[in-house]
Image (tube, rainbow, N blue to C red; front, side, top):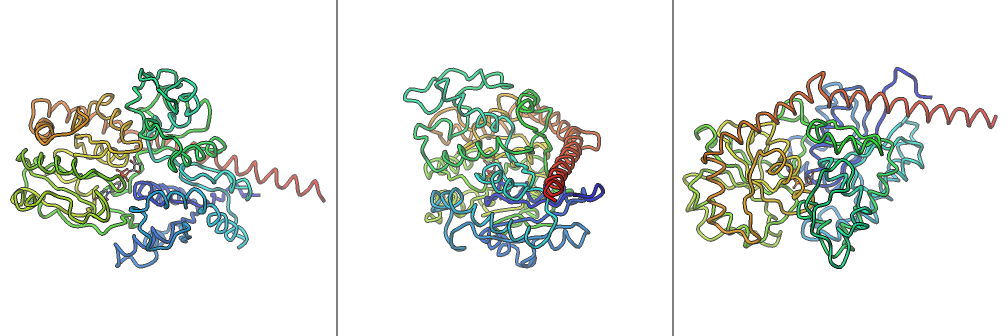
Length: 485
Ligand code: UDX
């Protein structure tokens, strides 16, 4: 039986995508700082990317964390594909491996850890995995599902069948009126649901994953969500009536802009010195995140709009932002044209850039981490959602919290609209309004992670509930053994 004073040992599986790795690494560090023993599992491919991007770190990504006294072990497993395989270019094949093959490798590593005689108690895995509750059950582990997006997105997927039943999803002519029957959600327009819930072909590999992972998650013992209770109060309360759900965000490193564990899949270009020379709040930071692709047409209009706006900017352009077989998607002459007021880099330390006083706005694809980081730095947002949860995240930012504006209100974006909206965000009359609103939301985040704040309290409550559950399992095991004697 788990001794009372002994903290749990958790095996943590990171979903092999950048936007999932950042929060789960910091969740692991947080739990370790609460005394947990953590075995952190990355895929070989993620490990390879990260250690290539940070050659000084060496092969042991968590070495510094261990030196600081945390009990974190680290191991890597295959996702089913060769390490050098281009997962961005062959996205569906990659996701098919995660859907069909990855669980065999996950089970193998859990079996090995358990067989080594380690006292392991729980399995913490990203909600998008389709197998955790089955593996947890097989090895008598408590299953903790980790959700890296807003609770609003979680509840939409959780109620996938209700959306279908009401004709808002997966039908010939889907309803276009507001969805007003999801518990805890006032009303949401179909255009503000996630990209997958708006698609007509609902048989894609992403749909198969979401469908299966939410069946699996309904069996989870606990769900941890990287959000703040006060920001999504009703949604979270309604979810709590169905499943033990804890808002524990925002999960950031202790020192916001620096981390003791490398999490970037690409090496970071420096732009701090360049920013140091710019006036306060004068620079727009532009990034489309780690995953989604921008069409060439949209990228050309955005680049032309940036050029037209006359605003200074840092443009992060991932090598695969259009496609990994289109190495130079910017318009000819663009870089030269804006050279006196802009820099274009492939990747940066985003938290450090957002925290720089010269940054005054963020043209973002609306990834959830980017939104939380921008709020923390009090940087208003210019929203250009591309894919997955980003449409729903945009609604929270623009319609509910009013801390940003849309990059475009039309189906086809134009450089004039891009330029107008950049100026509206950076220099328009409403600029101060956004700034004041975002200060308020920042306060909500700050107080949530303060010692008496909701996220801290929820984290402690989760640990207490988890320990009780572990004890219950151990007790049941003991009783079974005794029964057989
Ligand atoms: C996707 C989803 O849209 C997001 O909501 C989900 O939670 C994770 O997967 P992604 O494109 O990865 O998002 O964006 P985001 O959630 O913003 O995460 C990107 C992370 O990479 C952020 O933590 C950001 O700080 C970091 N980043 C981004 C960098 O460190 N450098 C960069 O140049 C760009």
